Length: 365
Ligand code: ACO
Image 1 (cartoon, helix red, strand yellow):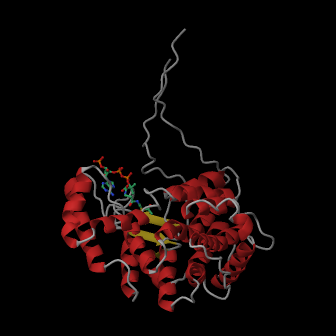
Image 2 (spheres, protein in one colour; image 1 turned 45 degrees about the horizontal axis):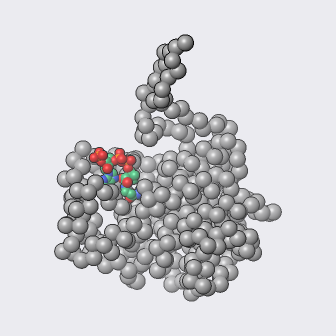
Image 3 (cartoon, protein in one colour; image 1 turned 90 degrees about the horizontal axis):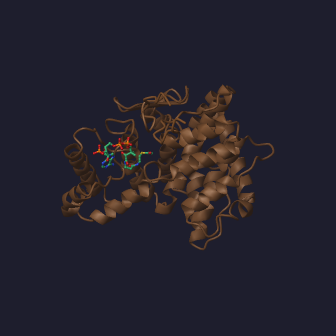
């Protein structure tokens, strides 16, 4: 039997799965454009509601402004809080990261709200309730008069957030709101392309986010910093990890060949925060040695700091428990997932790649 086996990149490196007007990653230049703006400018000038409005307007072709998104997300947070008993029913005995998956899967359309607002509004309510449940505390109701970032912090720790902390979380939410055809966005688009609804698409996106090669890396970043412990152990610890063939969490990227531009934005955001967590000179020394050691260990592959290294440091400084790092990432990326799912639906085209068959062939009879 003659079969033509096509040569295609395994892992889909360099394959364009869609056209998008939402965001663009230039891996050689270390540039990220979200909704027409460089990520650094956007994090300085826009808030989460503003970038979400731009993404949704682009994806749907329907104009929507920041104020309307702020009002809709506030209403959606309240609606999600009213639905918490149902949303958390399947999440009860699970770790936070898995409870979040179960609760997202339980979301349904709400009368008078768009599906995208229902989803994006619900995520911080669910994350806050799961964190508090883990501590034996009752969930806290949202305050629709607060911005999405400030209310996310308030629902996590019960305090009216310090404006600097709220601004720092807002900068984080903007910075990671969207990022081209990353694995979770691709998963969301594949599901949306089947004409499944936004709830199914975002559930798929969240599932893909949880792995440590994608959005599950920040907790292991802190574990690495804890394990290294002191400056004198940086070099031996990293050298030993690399010689065992381990991957350093918070380093490397499929697209970037230089430092991830989001690392610059988040490093500057941490520097503006007065409250501390990880010792910054120590983290900077770990980063510097890791970059050097990776250059030595993998001379064939440029590997540099990715967004997750400073995500871990920033979310820790904001006193967000590490088990909630990936759920808080999802709070931000839900803006991108919902926009990409809508953009994909508008194309009407099923995403269905091919595979390279390497199994046995039938014998000629
Ligand atoms: N530490 C050590 N070695 C690494 C790392 C790393 N962080 N990343 C890649 N490499 C090595 C690989 O082992 C491989 O080595 P080899 O050629 O000797 O076999 C080489 O670099 C090429 O690696 P690929 O597998 O081609 O890289 P890929 O594009 O698949 O990896 C990934 C991207 C998954 C992000 C990888 O860099 C990684 O595992 N990083 C650590 C986890 C992490 O930080 N994840 C968060 C990513 S950011 C985000 O998703 C939001």
